[in-house]
Length: 294
Length: 268
Image (cartoon, rainbow over the protein chains, first blue to last red):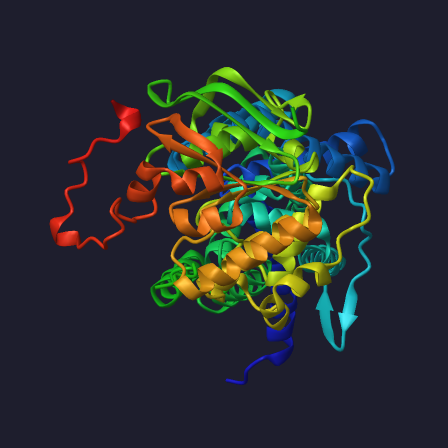
């Protein structure tokens, strides 16, 4: 039997679109972890809220898509700030596991609110990206996948540069490294926390719009955050580059296994990868290994 | 009365609402001077510094009475970063550099201390002039610096912040005698050349007295003796208990030390 290269290319390209979305959601996760050392399990739900906001702004209020995108992202940022201020900050200094549990609670609350406001039925987002397919060589790629990939890649690149060259990026990393020392350098630590949550909320909302555009929206779409969690752990909890590589790895693996072995192998493959990486590199592929001086 | 930059009056500090660490401590730092705060482990030296820089709240500590005034304004209620931006820089015990940032990024982090002050940003060269070794390693990760270099970086961060007062918590911690001498020479130079006042906490009393103008000796949360360094150096108790010089001038062997045979006069 001949291997169908064209089909393989199409599957791969579609997978890269999914990879980019995973990476974008992972980015939101990493931003929060990097600055505040909080493992935020509500990220999938923050993503969902972003998608629903977009749905309301376009389908409900009839705003043009670009306006709705901007408003949803702002809404996502505000949601991030609100969660940080009301739930996370009072938990400052508590055990990591308590904060972790609180974020699970926040996730459930967000799901509940969504069902109250928008109902539990899955819906499709109004089409705003157009349907004309794009061909790369002979391979067909859906337009949504291309747009999703480009946007996610651009946003990740932007954050990478910001962390390296922007002074605020240094403040964020300094705060992550040592809170008291960051304070002693004149860094406004609570403001850094808010900022990280706002950026993460914005990234998650953007990711939500893209995920919703491809697969429709439902209160359960936060599960996507779980795949993103795998990405983040594979790549390293505090590494933006890791999120990118992890996203590509997981996205490709899921698609290839799903296509050639059958859908039931998707999760098996993903979590096998997770275990393998953790066995070899417990901090993730690109995670910071704590410097230990003897 | 001379111009004081820092005035600590009768403060009491309690950790966790239960453990009282400072009991009515008072001290003052005259502008432009180096003041040494000496005392044994657990006397409350670091706590005093944290009370001044308001970092105490991160450790569940609180000033329960008394008042601290920095440069004419009471510090109560000011956030730590706000205090730094007013010119009070705390170089914490154990250096506390940002290990996974580069040397340069560590200095960049300290530029936040200048936010809203309307001063020209400090050139990193100022730091490299005092610590040439940091220049050589400026792009390397700070966590890989040697202990001495990390202490230099910690002091370098303070220089970036253009402070009026630096709180220095045990800069000699874990350093070889030669490095201690080097660092203290630079500390004295910074004080002389930039007119920065300093409150210096040290275990190593001899080296602290070499750079300080005034000294306070702390025991169990209270000042037991204070005065100009020259006076302290002549004090019999200080000489025996803190400088390790026997009263009779003869060297003591640890084998026959009977530390508390002669009671410290201030305890009686």
